[in-house]
Length: 467
Image (cartoon, rainbow, N blue to C red; front, side, top):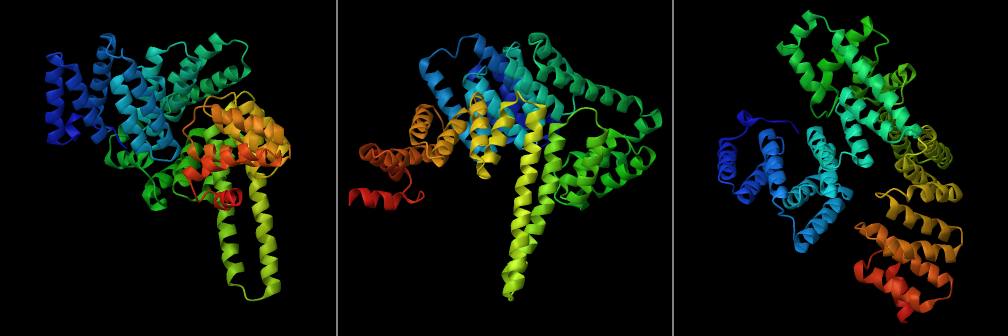
């Protein structure tokens, strides 16, 4: 999704934008908001419309428009639905709902976060930057907002801006080692960014104006489907790398170009070299490094599975299945290794603890999973899921009283994640069943059945209890 100025949009959008400006001049702010909101939903990259919409929303906020309890309830409900869209991968729908909420109350942090998440997922980082910068203008001393803005600045390659935010966190929390580490990392990136520009001689800067160089920059930003989409870019970067074989920023660009083009062997090579040369830990590059390893392994697994399926010899098929089992186990170990290393480097990052907990849960390492979920439930975003998984872990260990307590607490929490809520109610029913509490078990199973008759073995459970 690209940024577009007023000269790049259709005549209909230009006319609508002109009407919005006239409405602002007449102080008809509600009408102007509706027009501008429609423009950014139809053309999210229309930058002048986005800027003007935020100005109008702020003007309305100053007039005390967001005063009624009904408006407050509507915003909360809309944001919850938008968060559910994010969980389901419906990012465009989430963006629509976020804009609807912001049109009512532009200061709502939940709506701004949803807008940023949707923008990031839709490869529109400028929307994420806009959302978190707006949040920062309202909540300049909110550590979560500052951290989120720092992270999106990093994704956008704005090292200098990121460094300012990281330094502010350090000044607010001088004893926090994680913030200090992130500040040093941001400082290194900002220095590299500056050196990268300073190392460009005037002749090279002039070349950026040429059509060929502009084409390379376009390839760097476009959505990539295969290597042919970025052939010119990688060829150019490979040539530059011959002259500067240890250039971190060339290696990083090459690694990401190959990764987006799904050339995972090449991406793996460059990410590994980048990893050895960088002084700081780059979480996004580390995740791409893991993704490359897993993608290569998945291809081998798929190929082996096909061979095993078509193989007519029993002995040979057994050997292939054994090899397949070994690769699958190796896949789990790769994921676990990366996740454990990230938690070791960033012990205060609760999302990393949640990710590691999920991996332990999948690998049936229940004791370690419990430890990670107990940490992760302090994170507002992962508190519900962590609470549910704690209940599931205790159930697997046969600690049914503890499972009952954890799952009951999870159900009391507000959550829009219907899948995990069903899990919580179902396993709460199983826990009651194990504790010989038949009436409460039956009530839990009835609730699950009323929502989804095909969930697990719920139909058989209901038949059993009613018979």
